[in-house]
Amino acid sequence: MAEQLAGLADDRALLGRTSTAERVSDILRGRIAEGYFPPGTRLSEDGIGGALGVSRNTLREAFRLLTHERLLVHELNRGVFVRVLTIEDVEDIYRTRILVECAVVRGLGEPPYALDGLAEAVEEGLRATREGDWKTLGTANIHFHRALVALAGSDRTDELMRSVFAELRLAFHVVDDPRRLHEPYLARNRQILQTLRAGDRTEAERLLAGYLGDSLERVVEAYRRRVGDDLTGG
Image (cartoon, rainbow, N blue to C red; front, side, top):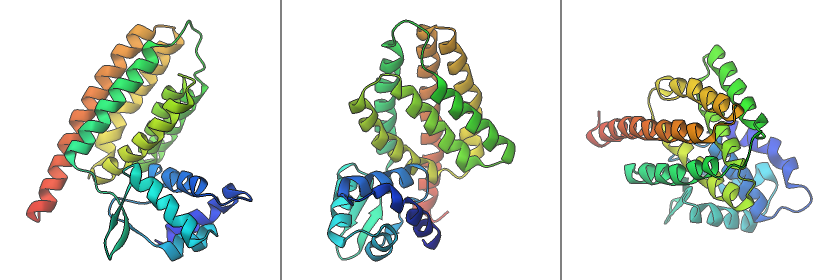
């Protein structure tokens, strides 16, 4: 937890002059999405409040907001914890992704498209692969899909999917072989990027739908294996 709190202290400047619960929740959501707080982590009010320089009431309101987003859970007499997802949660996350992400690509207008964010995420993934940093590769993958959703130009869609992608990171944490999970999709991200550069949104949607379907199967398989091992003491 000390390392995570040090990272939060770096985020303190992001709060500016007003330490609203919304801004605090944005920071914590971002940290969860980047993988700093694994599922099951107890969040210390004193530690996080001290790192961010916010009041206990502000922090509790931020916790409440993130609990509503299903990222945190409050356990009576124990405190606030990062949520541990069920297999049903994972399946629902992917249903949402398929509905939203494919609709974004389908609804794109005439090319060319603003693809800098997708290209940057692919480059981020390539760097992580060269360095053997599989956690960062998973983060780059999320960045790619977040940039894809942003092509819709909709603040509401961006806000919805920020929480979905943060929940997705909670599922990634449970997978015991992150390289096997993430590495195959870097080439597929690049393929979708190249297809959109060519202006073929119909083919890009087809590639994306297949990608998300395969990813769902892989994550659920790994998740079921890991959760099953935990339940049986394996």
